[in-house]
Image (cartoon, rainbow over all chains, first blue to last red; front, side, top):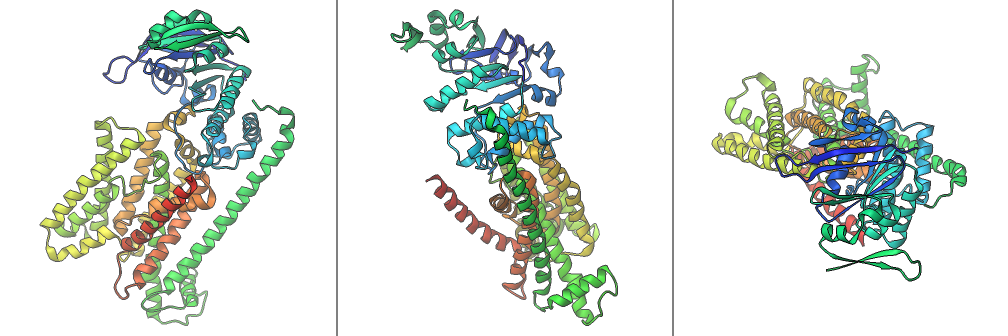
Length: 257
Length: 362
């Protein structure tokens, strides 16, 4: 599993005849790096992610993986390279955890057979990695929110992607599971794009940050460059204080109305 | 996170075993299901106003398949009852039950709505409207097949209208497709009611048949159509079982797994409309089978569509065969509309399901 170079050029998107939700956004993510996408509600984070996992076709601009436009690939080819963990609520259809993780092998197989020995190994590995061995026979509907999220991440890992897209992966998770997700993100050597609400967390985990405001890029670069009080005050309409934690001496942002 | 790569070998072995045991268990369940289906068919043929011993039923059927296999110890009247009347009726019950259950299971996945049912999407009301038009207004201008043909045409027209509405309203998402189906269903039912209102009051009795369902019109020749549509569509749905699994997670996740979501949902909808249209044409509207059977199937074999589809097929067939036995015998010699039986059982089933669901949440 190795990362892919993600190159986004001047992308914009609008629904039908509606006004643009995203406008002229460009950035590059080197192979194996983590990009955090930040911004207020409605800033265009989810829209941008949808362009990256090929759910929406950009109205302007291109999304390229290792130089190849994702819209010149087949859906299957994209699915072999890009996996996403989204905030969708799965219907309760009594699928077992293992069966859901097995879905991750669909882009690589015939979609019909149960899958070969290699598929079984990859699914086992993903279950193991997310600590789901004991839950593998349970039905998704019986799991807690945090456990479900881990199942969805395991499913994405089973896809063996070269680009992993995460939409608010720490939402609704307790502190331990948040930290586990963050540790996972740092330990994977594939390219990752994740939207994050917690800016302090973004500063710790991400190699690069893209700050969106009303569908436009307000800043792109290292967390130190982008997550400055001035930028954040503009993006979120709050007052920001940069503080230094007394024990670890790390930078910490606090927010005030 | 929670990495213990060195132990993975032994754990691999441990987790592979239950999977294999599960498929053996499923195969066993399928064999039990097939046996139950055959037994149900024989009992269903033997039960009725004139009871026919099960041995005679087997003898008649075996002799028809392989002439001269058994000595004929039964009257030609019994033979006619078994071969001409009851056996085709039982087969039709099996085909219709299997078809409606499979359509229900598939639609529940692509609409991500556990309450989806072949009748929810306007398909059946279209079929009923077509049949009512033929029965009350146009007359049998195409001979004996007029009513089934008109019913099928009505189902197809309704399907096209639903698809047209979803396009018109730019409503391709799962929940909006259901809403469009419900809306079209209501409109077509009012049109059908206008046809009944304008029609001959004495003939409206036959219309009840289409609204409540019944298998009394079963004939050998007609069986070809339900069988044919099942032979074409069920293998297609089985081939897409993994995609049906993926669709239950969500549209966007399914798309990231390489499934062309909108086109797939459209295809499953059309396949469902074809099956339902053919079934409604020969049996009228039989409710609750498509809604209820997949839930029972999931309870027995788990949620994966590779198992839910065959299980729904078998259970749907068995269920409707027995529902028809009840419809024929409860008010004998009168044939009760089968929709009354399935509706009654379905309603009670739902209350039980509700209780089980809330019990699980506590």
